[in-house]
Picture (tube, rainbow, N blue to C red):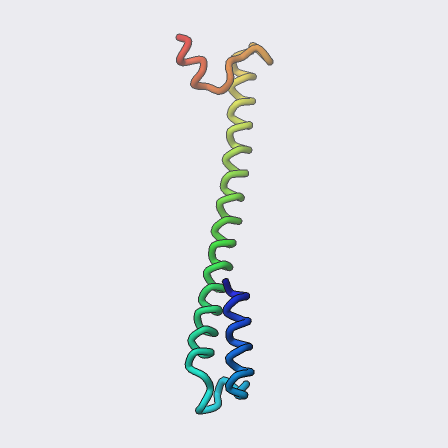
Length: 93
C-alpha cells in the first residue's frame, strides 16, 4: 500500500510539475498521500517491533518450559518414561 501511495505521489508530482514539498502550490493530494505513506511505514515498523518482542517472549517461555520439564523429569526419577509436563502427573493421581 505504501508503494502504491509512492507511485501516486510521483504521478501527481509529474502532473503538477512541482517537486518541492515546501512550494506554496505543492499538490495537497501529494502532501496528504505522503503523510498517509509515512503513517503506514511507522505502523509497519511498530508492528514489526511488537512481533519481534512477541517472538522473544515466546522463545523465553519455551526455554522456561523446557527447564521446568527437565526439573520435573529429574525429580520424578522416571527419566524418559515420565509423563509430559508437571500437570500430567497430577491428572493421573
